[in-house]
Amino acid sequence: MGAAVCLAMRDAVETVVRSMAEERPSVKGGLASAAQASSVQQLSASAFQKYLGGMDYPAGKQDMISHARKHDAPDAVIQVLEMFEEKNFQSAADVSKEFGRVK
Image 1 (cartoon, one colour):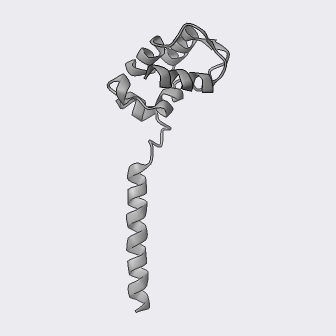
Image 2: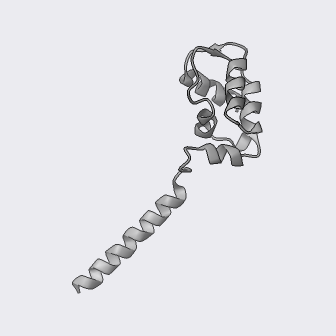
Image 3: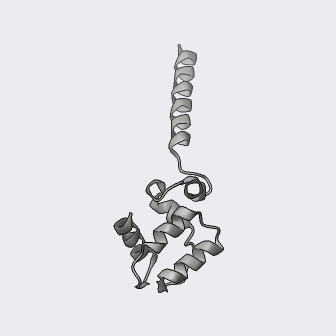
């Protein structure tokens, strides 16, 4: 009886772990998701932000576009940045707000 319970528990744990792995974001931290996004609508906020990693703030729209291009950002990321207002963004949080506004 004890072995049957252990086997049932092992199977349940394996099922949960498999489903968690399927739902987990890319181990590349979202870069794969952004690269696979064929349109702005498919681009996630976290994938978008990965291409702005290391950005020095405050930064203007053109600064962010240049930074994203240097980091081989896909077209969807550049398209979103081009929709941003012409202003200085003080932090990644400001960029996230603008991303939500344009998307």
